[in-house]
Length: 270
Image (cartoon, rainbow, N blue to C red):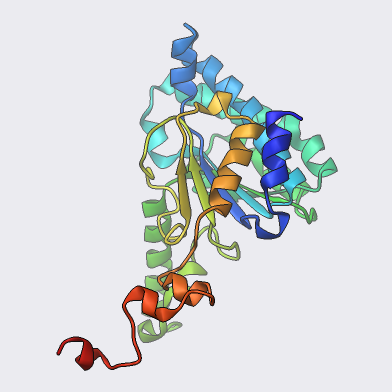
């Protein structure tokens, strides 16, 4: 039995995260560690994307969202940005037949009109071509940042209110969420960041309010199915309480364990 098979044997298929989001970090450092140009790291990262999508699809995860290119990434050297845009267009075109065959649906998330035309057309074509697929939904965050997304949602709601089409008093969490780029998608259950950094980097800030966070030192080009499986198993070993106590989640734990009793709050203070 391989290491991957051993981990998979421990994973409970009934308790899989419905939605996994990944910050794919470490391409440049991977290339530098091997004396290669950064572009080689990005190219190798495409292979890791293929592995991650295949693994998520085979395991039965419903949504996988990848942070492919942030709004802040536009500030990188022009040559690197040009290379990334080329790779994104090339990769989606190359992977499209497999995506369709594996029933994977593409969902573009971000300021897509800002993407250069050649890459943008290939991305939009892939989104159209997979629109009827009913398996894994692959969210691709491109030219995306959470602050941009929330600002756009606020601007949209403000216009509706100014036009008299929306009463500001009725705006709640659901209405705001329905105006985000991820409208209609469940919030991520698990967020994975590769590359050793432990920050969110302006990614899905609204949506990950109750996500479990997993930070791994593995650089993205080295992130394989075993690493993904380990993150899933770690997720399943956590207790997700959403603000509640363990006693509320697990009926077999008495409230007294948490300092509660049949007396009133006033009794506890006297």
